[in-house]
Image 1 (cartoon, rainbow, N blue to C red):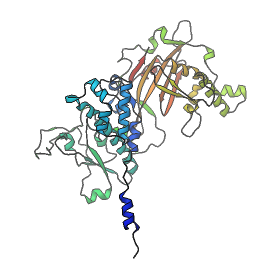
Image 2: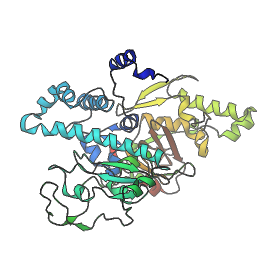
Image 3: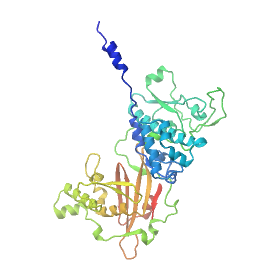
Image 4: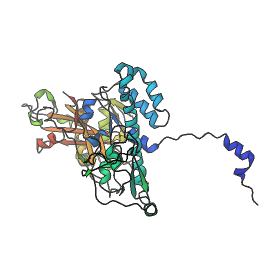
Length: 437
């Protein structure tokens, strides 16, 4: 009879010395590292789904303390520390703010809510990958004295992962929520005798059962806790159905320039304009190629160089430029490349206004944090939008404007000279106003 080497005494002794090591949840970390650190005021100006792309702590402005809390949570999500280490490592911060003793629940809330949100967003990314063989999700609540009645009411419900129910009920569904979702295959649903729901029960009256007593509690609307009626995973990673191609982005900022009592673009004070002349403009690509005889590739390189020169850079050089907020904008040739490495600097004819786009980054009139949704996947991103107005005549009337949208994955530049409608420019001023002249 063959001998099982894993069962020999020597092998068992060797295996007994192996210490299992916890591995970080990469998908949770992917969700967490995309978050932007904001002040509470900036954070609360965003829609609920856009807030999932941001990080803020009530009563804590952007700065060193917020960065310390963010970094500690990063280590927790990476599996390097637990709650006690998190609490102890930032004890000076908590004591300074009085979040000790009876107020220590604040620290627990910061830790549990953020770590669980990252993990459940990561679980959604896993569900997307496995949807072909595990197309169903089953809601799972803890069912103890701390479980909220509405969370108890949806415990055990099974829905297809692409059902609208999950747009509202994919956890996190409240502060310190511990609910999860189990994905299931067709065979598991059948073998366990589960019913796949087709009707979305959200918003209907239910009578949840108290898991401790078994008695029904008073009827209530079946809804997550206030402020949690969105899908954190979908906002971060998109939906189950893959996009047919590059999806367009649409602004979903809930506040506009009017909410901040800002003037319309066609009524800005003279001091808000940038003066420009013909020397601030470049010739377009076609004219440049005809004049110089250069091919398309050489023309693209010429325009990249013109933009980089505005920041004192040479071809191939990269810098981290700090904007008026102290936020980083990485300036370099890669800024103008597609995922495939192809230059895209002349898209929409913007090459003519590259110097003005550079000035918009350096000296904006406003900077907005704009939530944008991919209309095909549902994924939400947050971009900083730099806006500037330009004039070239003696009457100082606006003759053009430029916007520069930026996040760590790319940018989009928009210019209009002359603008057809200033209302279009005003429509771009939405989200959270994070800088103003």
